[in-house]
Image 1: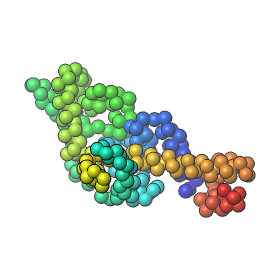
Image 2 (image 1 turned 120 degrees about the vertical axis):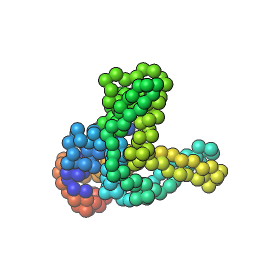
Image 3 (image 1 turned 90 degrees about the vertical axis):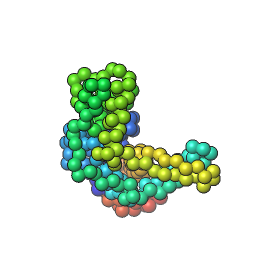
Length: 235
């Protein structure tokens, strides 16, 4: 792992440790697309964010993601290897930036949710994501209208941003239960980052303890040199 990449990865891990899932997704997106500005990252649709994170997973951990779930019927733990190529969804050629919901004579304009919306604390509140996606100056307060708006946004995502709504099929070998569960690339990617950061920090600790070198000096070493030093130390 090159020095700059290792430093960027550790910084992303540190920034994301106490972050919520939406903010973690944005942190990882900045790592996946380092040439994009923060504003451009925030403006990406959720599906395009997820496509970029699939690419980052492939570069960092390979083309297979391992799903670990408990059967909802019998609680048996299951493992499933997920080829990322099998869950990639080609984006539609023409994606509108403006959608409308007409309800009881009122027309509400809205857009697709973005990576920035999921990172916004407002988006986690009841009806918050719908309010963020609304292109109108005044958000509806009627619960039925809010519910209809959320349903319209969900339908638009399914049609125009399908990478955001990928799900996995599971079959329990013990009780024959069958179910589907959403695939969350942020969770999968973060799990790998957490393991990788832990391993890298452990290497830094051992080498620093033996030689008194700083973190930057150790990260400047190639992985092959770090492993050789660890072997010399006996770790």
